[in-house]
Image 1: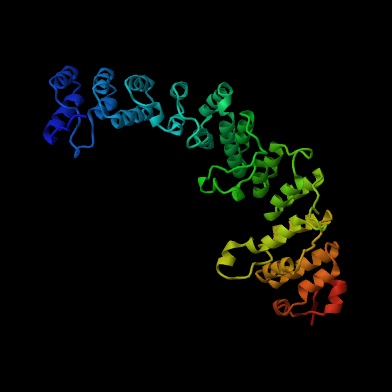
Image 2: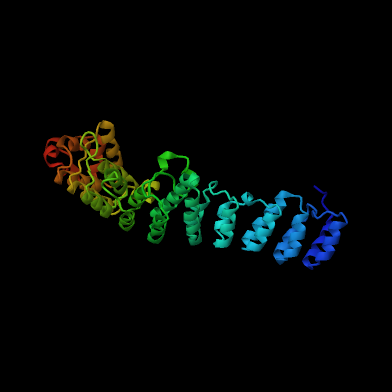
Length: 390
């Protein structure tokens, strides 16, 4: 690699390039002078030529450029300017296709440039470029994705996962248009994996399906668009996802499809367990300020609880630890929330009398309810399940 020019000579060469003096630049090179600018000068002759779009000058400089990094950077600049002619010229003279992340190419929205890179060995796997572009709603990436996947069955698995990630993303966003487009592109709503958030891509416990994302977000229109199938999908699992965040509409929809609310080995409902436990997360601000969560904040959660118990869901804690966990959750809510939960479970016979009695018959629980002017009577609660006013 030749030595860089002095600062003065660098400025002279750049001025020749800016003026478009092709033959003088050619004579400069033939005289044996370097075209590497001084380290203190950020611009290169190729930068100037690319800005001008001077095809002949670019060709002259790239043919005499020995630094691969400079060639590759110039290719990135040509892509950013959406100049296919310059991209072709640079690649023909040594710029490396794989030096540029394919996502950067896809985000140009330029079908011709996208096609050129895909046809010349672009890396379609590293960085999940199609997932990135599709997540950014680049429509011009859809057809290249479908065609490339069809033409390269050896990469079908890796490409499929990218479409599935984008589908999970749009299921979470509730974007019906792009859900339809991703389904058209062959994305699978049942595959489990990460969304577009790379922070959790290596944590299987954070992986979901598009169907689960729809349930978590409580979006019934999205869930219908994804077409859950009782013969293929674990409806009870989807019911648990929907129940966590109080989506009464989806809970009802899944129950009507045949989801079994009582899926635990002891005959209890994991969906009911989850909904009760997550009462403590219904008002994040109150929790952060160490305030009790209000009856108003849990109104949607209570509607979801009612939907579950109306369809026969049973609360059957498997041990004292599970029961105490729900008790601790209720301590984080206003006392009236405990009363409403107990009334609901009692009205629909959603748990054994002994369980409600054990829930209420604890010193701290009695203290918790005392602010309502209520007094606990163990024998009476075993029958009525409801604290009584003094």
